[in-house]
Image: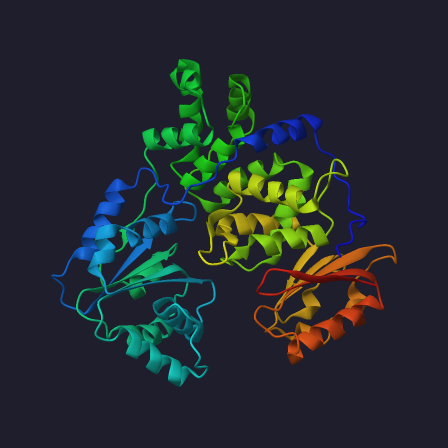
Amino acid sequence: MIKEEIPLTERSVDSRVEREWRKREETHSFIREGDIRGRDDDKKTIIEFLLDSNVNENVSILPIVGIGGLGKTALAQCVYNDEMVSKQFNLKMWVCVSNEFDTKNIVKNIIACAKEKEPTEVSMERLQSELRTTIDGKRYLLVLDDLWNEEGERWSSLKTLLVGGAKGSKILITTRLPSVAKITGTAPPHLLGGLSESMSFDLLMHMACCKEEELQDPDMRAIGKDIVRKCSGVPLVVRTVGSLLSKKSKHEWLKFKENELPDVSQREDNIKLVLKLSYDHLPSHLKQCFVFCSLFPKDYEIKKRTLVNLWMAGGFIQPSNRSQHLEDIAHGYFMDLLWSNFFQDFKKEPFTNEGTCKMHDLMHDLACLVAGTEYWVALDDTKSIHERARHLSPRLNSNIMGELPISRLKASPREHFCLSLDIGKLDQEDQQVKQIYAYSFKVSKSYAYWVCITHMSGRCQGPLVS
């Protein structure tokens, strides 16, 4: 049972914005898998590298380098799924590495991708043996997406396990850091630049769902070209701005260009300004749903059903009449954020038909920025909990389950906070799960609270209410 009567902080929102947002819901027809524009030359260059068999080493490594938002991952996905590339390799594997370079975890993910099932081994000794058995002598393609590690020794320890592939094996690495490319690449890095002005303009008008007469309007085209110049060829920015301007009038486009849109340049702090602008235009009910996502780790594959249940458990869903089902409204919220590029990489699992998505790193940074002190993700430093934190997301591998300094949280008896826990694949009888439930009831003695416990199935167990 989901309790709905949770007091939420009221935020004022312009009623015109709310009305316009509801009108835009009807335009959903979201399929953008493989939708990549203006990268034909980049794609050709990388595919030539992948198909090149005239190499000295068994395993060749090409880093793709560029700032956040340029589409490094999208480009890697594009070539990874190319038909000629697929025919070239006996084995293809995709692993998202992100901020934490954990060799053991990377090895496990490579094995899981290659064998399409989780490895049963747990020790590093057995995992490295299983990895080498899996890839040695095979011509493979491995993508290591979003690599940040700059320590040469740590990279070498992983590379040693990968060099046994057959001649012609290739590794693609996507990274923002030239220093990463320097320690990993066996070939000169592919430096990804911005989109051309013409491709940026086409993408903007596509995302804005412009009608044919608008595309032919010289004034509208002039305004659009001025806008894309300010976007500096960054696809994430162009997409976000295009979604924001969808269904807007020429006057509103002009007002946005002159009064709101900053010059982006290819600097990530400026890019975040544009993303923040898009967030500012969200109605309040979507703002709190987006900010809630700051509780997920970066590059986390979010299950739609889990997220929707957490929103409902947190009291974020606002029915306009009693006949509406919360699940249907929450689905609309999700699609609104997806359509507006706050989520990406939406897909449905082939066997379960369950939808999943991710957040771009810069969108996750934005969610953390606007979350402020109200949302807090626990690692090990419990002292860092802000006294006004109301939404806590402990990681199971952290020490938070020992002693959370509840006394530091300043709340009146009528206030609440939400404790969101993902126990993943653990069984209901697992000792950690029992510890979580026991801890939850301990918290309940101090405050009114909300506990949302999610399993791999995506179903919320709870919330538990004191």
